Length: 473
Ligand SMILES: [Zn+2]
Image 1 (cartoon, rainbow, N blue to C red):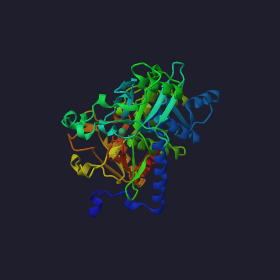
Image 2: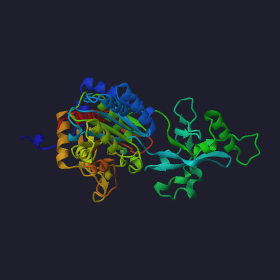
Image 3: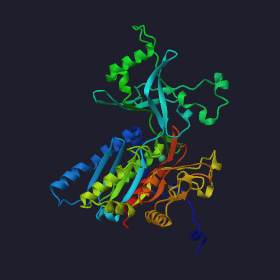
Image 4: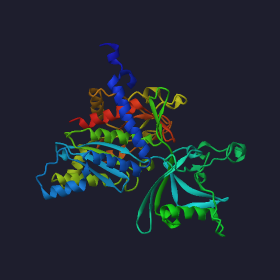
């Protein structure tokens, strides 16, 4: 045997691309950048995924259920359907040719990202300026969100039950908002002795909202009053309506090509919209798969998958049960059997080696930008605490699928042992008995306001996911 057959060499995706594939990389990543620009929050990510699915013939599950009830002989193979969960989480599926109880293939990505959420009582006046109080969501260096233009996205429910959707700060003509850091000249005592996580503290993440006072009023907080007048003029809302609102402050602006060779993409929220995009794009290309193919876009991954829109919620099992019912299977045994025979990719990003901070990685087990999709056998921290550890048998199948589809892949861990760690939705799928492994592109500057991906990795991820869904067991 030759030495190159004995050792495993990693090579960059760029080294093996044909002219046609290079064009495909550009086409796929152009669509990806559009998704990033129009899906800044979990609600927008779900709405856009739904709109794109509808355009490709996907219909609400309720419609399929009604049609099947009217005509029990209706064939289901190849049916494309979706179900939304409270506008923050969506499941898309293509029904396969084998019974669901034989198992399905699942891609589970998440569409929430770190951000600043407005507090229930957000609007205050301080030093004759109106501010919005925030509570940070997820894990990130809070100071990243200071001194950058922010946009406000979300919904406000009025007391009449009307839903007002806002996205303010993305159009060039829109105003933007910002969190103002202390100037360097006066920072010495108040800030320079602080540890990194406290460079800006949670209660200091105040968004500058407005500055003109209501000159006609003699009340104390005239700037706040004028802001409320403007809000009422524009949206017809009062201060109390802000209580039943979910408004997220996110970095304003569009995804950009990065690098002189334009080989990378810089944008907010690529963790994990890159995997969400690659997952539904792969699903959209399927004909009738052998196994039912499911794409699950979860909310709340950044806060440990909690709540009724996170991966821990029973929503996923409920939809599986409804799909089984369409095939005449209504017992708990059928649901469990389906899970036990299913497999999933927990479609989430990895951490690429940052050349400025290489020492946090163990290089033989670290992800490199542009070297293809990154498999993470286990996540967690310390002694694999809290990890979902993929079985060797399942990993063998996944690597064979990728090799047969000529997909470039790498495998390893996030960082050195005991250096830190993290978790994904993997363990909540695994809990159901589903064989699961983490698998997605690696990013630089993950959980920052400008995460960086490789176009080659985005393209590879879509191909990898498609090969996984198309594989028959
Ligand atoms: Zn993630």
